[in-house]
Length: 90
Image (cartoon, rainbow, N blue to C red; front, side, top):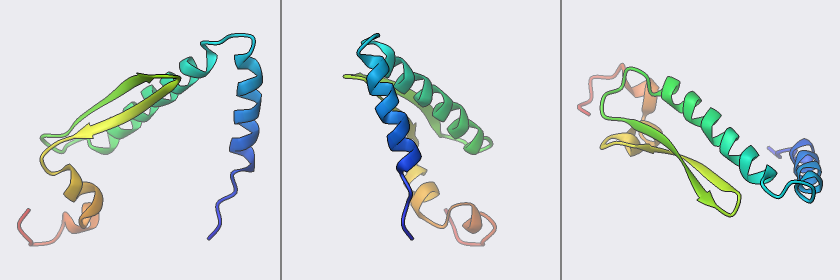
């Protein structure tokens, strides 16, 4: 299945044009997107013990959402929510 990135690329192009006017704009947008991503991740991990969600501003106009915890890889890449109902030990 192909992913259509036309809208995202259009947004990126417009953002780059505005960045020539305000050099901090791209960093501010990236940081705000990461903050919203953090809110979404916190709600997705709600009720799970030992998961800490944060966002980091990395410089160069880049930010990221970070989820940390002992079981995070299993939650994300194991059986996830489907497997929560199983009788397998975690």
